Image 1: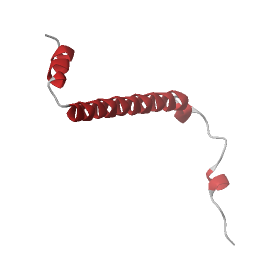
Image 2 (image 1 turned 60 degrees about the horizontal axis):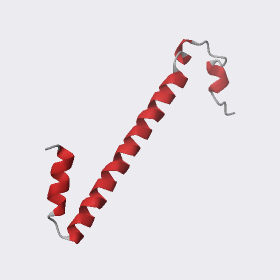
Image 3 (image 1 turned 90 degrees about the vertical axis):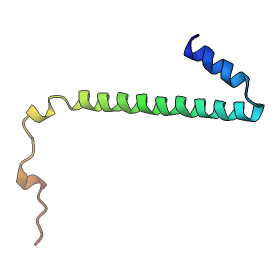
Image 4 (image 1 turned 30 degrees about the vertical axis):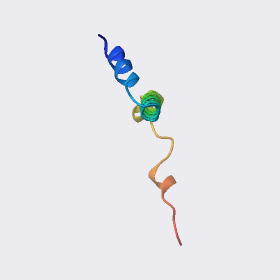
Length: 70
């Protein structure tokens, strides 16, 4: 018996309100997985966009970025 079949079998024996709780938990897990996948995609995209930038010559000097008061 597969895991999915075991889960279905166990859920079938629960009262309807407990079945609803199980459904809510499954929806929570799916949402958590979506967020994890979205973060992984975002991190990969940022890494790809930044790749090679540290090798580029800066168009600004240190004096360009220091604010002078006086």
